[in-house]
Amino acid sequence: MANNFFLTGPPRRGKSSLIINFIPKIKGSVGGFVVQRMLLSGKTIAFRLADLGEEPYRLTQPFQGRIPDPVIYKKENSSRWTPVLSTFNQKGVRALKRTANCSLVIMDELGIFEEEALPFQQAVLERLNSPQPVLGVIKDKASPFLDRVRATPGMEIHRIEEKETPSLLEGFLRERRLLAR
Image (tube, rainbow, N blue to C red; front, side, top):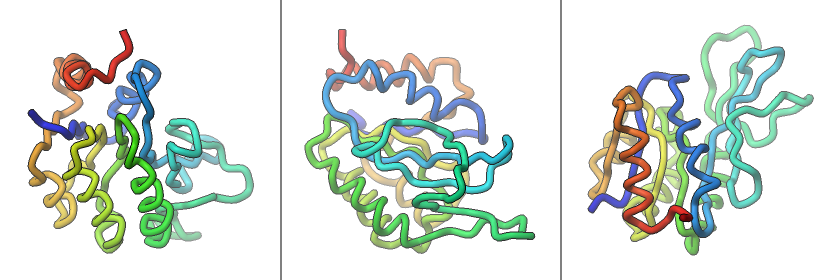
């Protein structure tokens, strides 16, 4: 039986929204992280890491003068995203370490910007290889880190376009007795 259930697929198709819909139904504690889109006038200006042990699970956050805990941002007059490895390696690692007693670990989302965040990668792989169930989103791209994650024993990865994905996710959570009746 797989212990890790991940969603993948094109951006903005509802992968994280599907997970959020199940969170209120989870029996027990939920921890981990979510990468939130920071919006200014409807435009994405950065992404930040939110520790679910400290903050609610939200996909977007309005920009209010500063970006707390950014994981990627665009420099002024640039179209390229710049990673902030210290956020992954400090707050991301701390968020994953504090899930030791959680019923379910969330990793929303793993992507290509973590490629050089080695302590974060180590924490992710440790959690994926633990007996705790992990529910997450993985970017639909190839990279050495993401390929290692995909090759982890006990991984189940589903494309969001598959019509049966919501029922498969519900089944994953029911098999582990994580859904409240």
